[in-house]
Amino acid sequence: MFVNPADIGGRFSALSLFGLVPAALIGAPVRDIVSAGKAMADGCRQENHANAGLELGAFIGAAVRDGRDKLTVALSPRLASLGLWIEQLVAESTGKHGTGALPVVDEPLGRPDEYGNDRAFVAIATDVDAPDRDRLNAIETSGHPVLRLTMRIDGLGAEFFRWEFATAVAGAVLGINPFDEPNVAEAKDKTKVLLAAYASQGVLPEPDPAAQNDAVSVSSATFSGASPSRVIRSAVDSIRPGDYVAFLSYLPAEHELQRAIGEVREAIRARTHAASTFGVGPRYLHSTGQYHKGGPNTALAFVITADDRTSTPIPEAGYTFSILKRAQALGDAQTLEGHHRRTVRIHVKDAEHAAATIEQLFADALK
Image 1 (tube, helix red, strand yellow):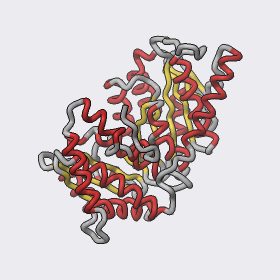
Image 2: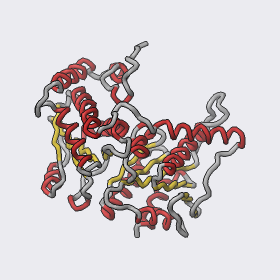
Image 3: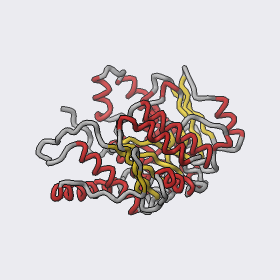
Image 4: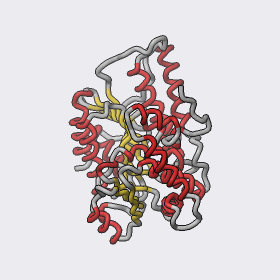
């Protein structure tokens, strides 16, 4: 048993036992990770431009204060999976009290004219590879702020500490506490209410659909239309400069679905210049979920569900994992609407063809 210090929040725990014990179990070079983290920590004690964490944190905070709150992180191919960790760290730490930086970590770099004036870019290269330099140069030349960082491929611990330190600095710049998450519990509370209703009634209470067809139904407290695609079209037409689109999927994170949603995101960016994110539920509830409710009211959220292919009971709970997951999706949709976020729930009737259904739905909506 390894007892971690109790006062370290999960998203700041990569260099604690919480992160290092699993790293050791899979054979990662733990001594090198810790050594690199310590070197960065020592460097972050400097009160000058040589302080890499201070530089990054000041960049993030200044960008948000300048209206550029979509922090677009361009990663080298070898660092692709680091994006999910950066997303949780920055979004959950800064997205509160109507402000914050929204990390956009898995979006392919586009042309400069595809971006609005709400973007700031951080590019991370390693000593062996880098993100698309030509695209970054074009983006910077067009007037978007770009901060270029480099790290050694064996210096992951340094990057962990740099971003943790920078997130705290950004919180200070924005005047918020980066170490709490005041809105995370709200969706949990809604989920408990829904599960209690299921226990007494045998079904989850769900809103009536705004429109449906043989493949999909959509519901929304904000938008309406004669067909599912018309509802989606109404939602997309509501996007204004500075808004972002959150795709919140409770479907299995399979390649085909991610590819389909990725293409939809690029189509929306080309049409509206809006940033977008993709979160897998219920994981995102402890990541961008805090930002969705606590950050600025600029979100258009698509909550995507489907009937599960399997149904596994939770021992002694009185419901299955499928019911729990559905309750979490419905609870988060209710919470988003309670914060006056524009929210559309998309329910795919045949999970096996979810990717094709989503593709067709948005293709019809964006005609």
